[in-house]
Amino acid sequence: MHPDASHHISTVLRSNYTQFRHLREFPVKGAVNQINLILEPVAAGNGFTVLPESMVKAFHRQQDICILNLTTAIYETIYLAHKRHRPVASRYQFILNALFPNQL
Image 1 (cartoon, rainbow, N blue to C red):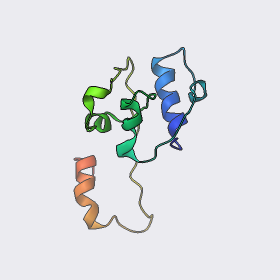
Image 2: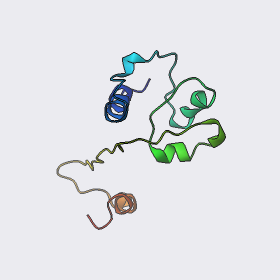
Image 3: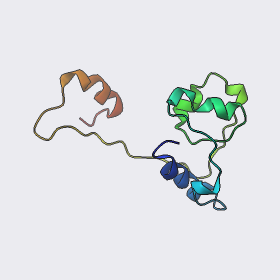
Image 4: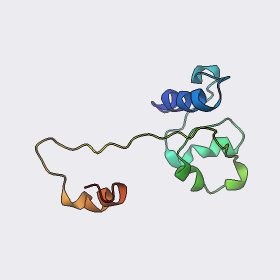
């Protein structure tokens, strides 16, 4: 059970599956906290998860999972945070340019 699971699942359910309102409507049988292992129990038929599309597409057992297309897509804002009185270290410039092209 990821600390943000309730938020993410509630957001998806509220926007796409109005018959469900909250994570507590589903029994929780276990927890995995390593992003590369989250889909293993799902592939074994033990429930569902809400993940970014890029993580689902990278899963090595595509034939064992089913991806539901959402009626309403869900997006979250990415924030850039750094120390107030210090410039961002130059070693991060490649990543920042990839995430925020033409914005920095």
